[in-house]
Image (cartoon, rainbow, N blue to C red; front, side, top):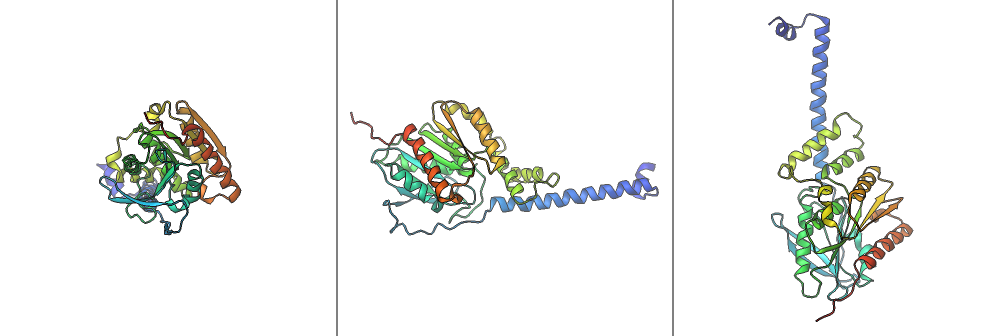
Length: 312
């Protein structure tokens, strides 16, 4: 009782200092939690980029397709036709990007007779909502594959996926559960969405604050509580045995470069690794962009040839 009374009405200087430190720690934790919550809100509600492009005048004869994502509304995508009966490559844009920023990569693939499809994830482009950094985005990729597999002019069993960070996670998650995916290009992929939360906190310049990253990860986990039992992608990588996968490691993004390297080391054969100086395809200069496009197109030409199956 005497101890409780001393804490309630401190008389000793040591007790007063201890109480002051406890109060300071409490307010520090409270402030960290509030800031982390605001950061997570900013992360899951990214600034959207515009995709307002007139398809009527765009080369490549694009077709606007709509598809439904179970439990998450409708999406709109651009389909660029290639070889009839050939494979289709779906391009999955990165965080804070949009389909409109991938049109040059799309053109490079379509020039080699690939059917190509691009769309915007939730909270990107013209779409509202929040980003789950890959959890629900994988469902969007699955819905796009289902849409295209139902078309009579495409091969329903041969799909290729390309993705950058958010898009790479969603594409890989879909590929691990879908045998129709026959080739993958993963640029700056991560194993769990909370790793992208850490990247977001660090890009806001607050990664060095004690417990800030952990508090943000906990806040993100609370928002996605229904996904708490989802395992990291690396636990199911074995399901990709026989699926050619190219891992692109961008050295100017150390955090994602390391997660990509770890994923490459854990992936089954056949696997390939490409190490580049600068990542984020949409921000590359013309020369680097051409080299990047050539690397991606060459991979698909070898691993997912655009040929028509012989009719028997």
